[in-house]
Figure 1 (cartoon, rainbow, N blue to C red):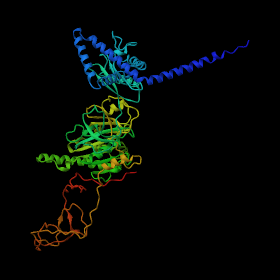
Figure 2: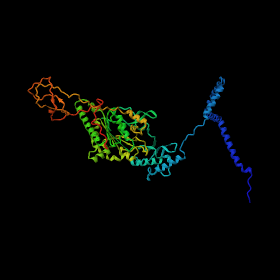
Figure 3: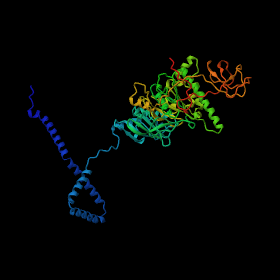
Figure 4: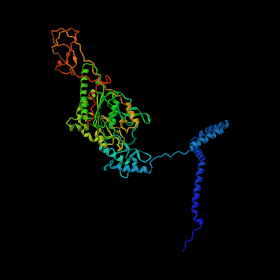
Length: 601
């Protein structure tokens, strides 16, 4: 039997109903937009009426009569004033509109997704914060999470940004391993890729976890406001240090919290060790330290990698040498050891004589050694001593002699560091991505934050002596000769470099030197005269010396005796202490010990 079609009015009724609903919804929305001011004023008048009714109900009966009289007097005054009723009406409408405005809904608690996240985190902490012997456990499977979590905050993505946890007193919060397990769990459950800080309150049995913002990377190398003997290693969190330094960044001028390293005779951390992965920024750290040290001291750079990262310092005023080869590095470090001993002896003699230390012993000397493991490997292959052995004297006596040693090495070569380097470098820095165990092995303590796997160059941790572990961001100090360096950073480094010191050779003498001697005794031309000379004399030079023996021929005090250099002999005996070579800037400290040695192939 064939089906008969439905009547047209029934088949098209649903479409007409939907169309009618859409028209009605549009009309309602339009009416709401048009009547929105009236709705707002009506809502405000209703709130005013409710407030007046509540005030009238709260007024005692004996005071209602005077209150009515006062209100009537105010109404009468307003009515008699010019434009009084109009102004009163406008004021009433304005107050009603202000009270009737739509206010944003204040969130008073977590939503369903946030509650589910808190419950999951609570269940995950049960094995760590509970024992079977506890009759009333704070953490139990299926328990109430609100009793353990006091404070919590979420970001716009629904991830935790702050959480305060109350844990039972029997938890072993004094053991680093137990605390590390809880921190690792919270880091994994709260979301990876962010840096969390954990503050343990052992007295109150509280743990506060908070998400730290990333340290700014917009601060480049510049002249920091410090005194001689202070070096800005980098910048950290505002609540971690008590000192700020005015800096110029890409966002403008600001006061940034700085990690300041103090060196000198009264420093408790006179030497520094920086460890990191390749490309982590240890070389930039050494460049930054060198640029800050040059205005007040001399710098000796020994580069084991041989990549030419310090070529911008070659020939600059205050830079004694930049050595890249093994022979030059050994000679440089040997000179540094002798210079340290000379400073100690000179300062000791001055103290015994009751005089201040000489000026050349008070000028700081910085020894920057980058990648000593490479030089040690080359020295072992060539049968020469390890360059780190020459650092024992500067490391042990550098604080008294104003000598500071900075060593930079990579994680894969830390086992090659000598005992002297590890024992005397009390200031430590770790840069680049590293596991908490690696950071603790270098700094001697675990950081209070969770390191992230991806960090920019120059980001890491610092610890000065026995102080706390601080987050660190080294100011950007790239190689200005590198093509990948931005123009702003290149110019910033070039502006801090001192002028190049000119190296000029003395002109040869025009005539042979002739010395006039005054001798009370006569000499003969056959006598052989012995003189002490600090330098060899050419055969063509003519030298006049003081006579040591009488001669039959009389010579007056004004006579000049010329003796051929062929008959001059050098008397045996101890040679005098050689004077330091002349410097470009007089009185600026010890002179370079030798010319820079080219890098070995």
